[in-house]
Length: 535
Image (spheres, one colour):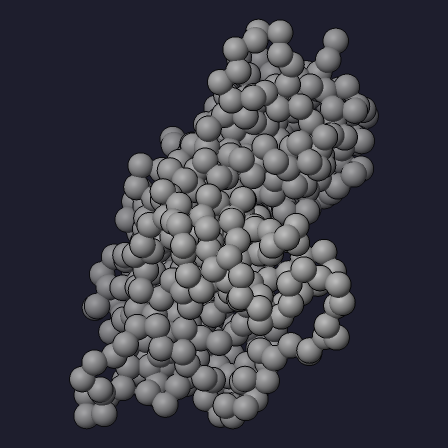
């Protein structure tokens, strides 16, 4: 899955009240035993019920453009090229007579035969036909629907290769966009000046790491369906298992579909706006083992509700919470405004490090808890806390980083524009009996200057913005506050580079950047940067 959320995400960590759809999966109703086929192939493309084949196909058509004269290649031409790099979307980059071609599935160092599919003035796109010379980093993708699904982009690359590429992606953005000097790997000279970019911090086991599944539900002739959307579309790729999801999430989704199918629960049709079940959302607490199931429905009434809940409880005993979220709007936003508990608690509990968090149906929580602890550990390290400092956490969300910092600082102030997130942050502070942290609702660029007027001086400012990066006014505020250190947590290397350039020009020096692999087998990479104020 991409996060988008945070996977592919575009990341929207600021919004704990509304979760966005992001390369999610959709699955298919289990037929009754009398009509069920003897075998059921994973990866079958499913057309939404009631939609004509021509209507579905027309959505994927693109308008033909007038051919561009004078290009070294033409559409449908086959050619052999060397792949010299990979772009931020995971596409191989090659050149045919100086003309750039992007090739999905090709890896740096490979020689490939391609067919030109689309041309623009400066670059084009080509389809991989044959690998003439393979990269040593090429591996067979273990997922059976990898070529169809849009959730992962680089399963065909060795994990060591992925980590090296993600570091290089960060380096390239710092140099190209930020115009920043990066130290050469393994350089000797002590006199050399520049930013140290460390190797990407990866996982020992880079599979089954996601603690949350958000699965859109559809219908086919056989019944309820759920899997992933095909790349760049809303076509449902039927799926039973996702190799980056925790196994228990797969099991819960499959059981909900099966039970719903037997009870005749209808699936929501996004074209007509009819049908009941829109999404199945499952959250898994890795440390405690607790699970939450959220049924997102197109209306309040659930047929056979008691029978469905009873069957789910019997089949999945480790589910501690079953909730319903009502979303009647014709939108691709997953959650609506109303959430109610059908059975159990309204939250489940989990830990990141020593900090406990209450996770509700709509609250944001990092989807890879193992790497989140690594990411936050590096954030605390870069903050350089001795226990006497005052820290401001901009874009604090539900307080995850704030509470980590509060264990090592004298006082932490968190600010967040989403009121529901601040409510969660305050609840989590109470849950952990942390009294040295204060949260306030508002835009960082408005609240922080007000804190300064009240005499609050920050020794360290931590920022953890969404993909678009920091608001320019917040960067101005940081430069006015003049903290000794700034720690920048980023999910987008390009906006990180842009913002570091502003801070560097304002009197700060970027000392070190550490990429962290939060989403193995996808193109996404997190980074933590440490900046110190120049004397």
